[in-house]
Length: 300
Image (cartoon, rainbow, N blue to C red; front, side):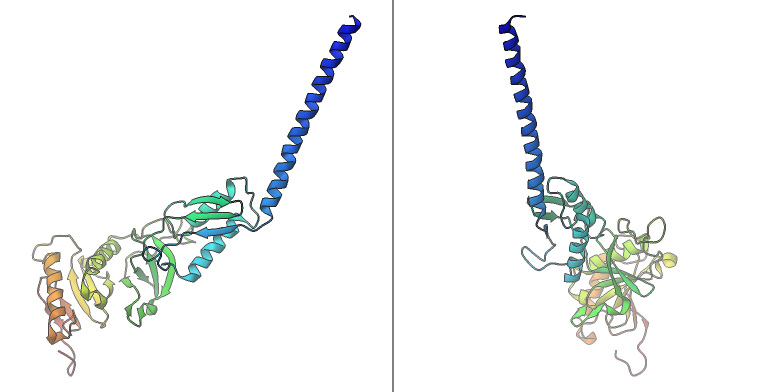
């Protein structure tokens, strides 16, 4: 090999070495930059914004302040105080935290609006103001009859201006629980045709102006007789009969029953009461049939 060839090989080898050193330096610099950037982004606590369900556009939230605070804490514990801003796992953890809370449908959408801010956009479950009363406790259920993580004492349903919500009373089944019967199951509908039939009746009555007089539905006679009874805010009972939309020979249609309630509520003799001032009234045949007369000295 000539001196010129050896010099040329040295120049090539030196160039390769310099290039390799430069590449290593670039990679090391990128790694260092990544670490420094991550540390800076982790330095501040993550702000979490949840799109709460509101009454109308821009109105107040439908969830109590205490529930909102509990959900925010649940999400924050799942995400951690300094989550890695370059990974997707914290976003998934935030979504799962709300999805398993019992308040949302499916896993909510979570987006990172900045290095230190997360926005969560859930699809909230709908509560029609209905609870199922069992063993002295009122369990809130959503529009699909699934449990909501909200419970009340059975005697707390009445507010200053009328019922805070309506109840379904004496269901055949207990609230749904997980496979080990330890925790409540928020993903499964409350079992029993009686609960569904009672909720259907409440939703029908909800359209009427006299709904403020409806306290709830007693499903205690449903399993044996197949009938539902309306309990009023006056402490009285109106026998409705078979479930909404179900035909029964000799029984009035839903429209005829509603018309009967409207007539009674509009009658000045009864002071606008759907029970006609009686302890128990049967409208299942379309008219107002008194089952129990008031005690001597009572109204009516």
